[in-house]
Length: 313
Image (cartoon, rainbow, N blue to C red):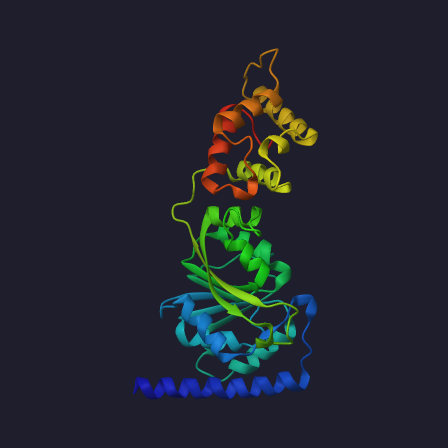
């Protein structure tokens, strides 16, 4: 009997698929302002779902479900799917697609901007990400932390930045920040012709798993350091920290820190000299940010903070 039920569910969704695709062809103009590029290749859709390794007990959060091609496959696997959709037209298509099917009770549609909304509790996140919100979404997701994994599709170059390693051409602050909080792996390339309408560039799918436990650091301090280092990632650290604006910022922060913590400042103290000493001590004077690992960034941050030099006031 369970087999018959499953076959009926599948038939209902396939019927919904056909109806939705017809409606899309007839009436929907995709909104480029929302980054709408509907994934239409069923093999790619299935590959994304497979990479997520969804359990029957999982709650899945999906971002930008569009007309529901990916949503349908997620509903087959998950206990529940919570789909964030900003476009009311797509919300109507989703409801029309699954209305009257056994899957409607498993689907919760949140109408609005996922960046401005609180995330629900979920186990897995799966999304064909609108390119405009890729960066803020990644950081919001990683700060949320209460999930097992995320399988996300981005524009190819953005995805490559997420998993780039020190020394790679695309290694940047995004790479370092993401890999501080999560393990990131490339799982699938997706050509632009797999979408309707086709975007200008190819896409890639990555799998993100949050680090557990998280590094025990001050993330505001980390962010301040990496902002400075990656502003000119091809320059040596000694050159970066000789910049007038950087010296002024760190001098101001040093004075505020010492004042608030009642630390006596020697009359002959010079922040620029102390920075040079720290870089020499860590053997980083001639090192370039684009070649540094997160362990090296953490070591440098620890030495700066130990000498009362901070990157946030």
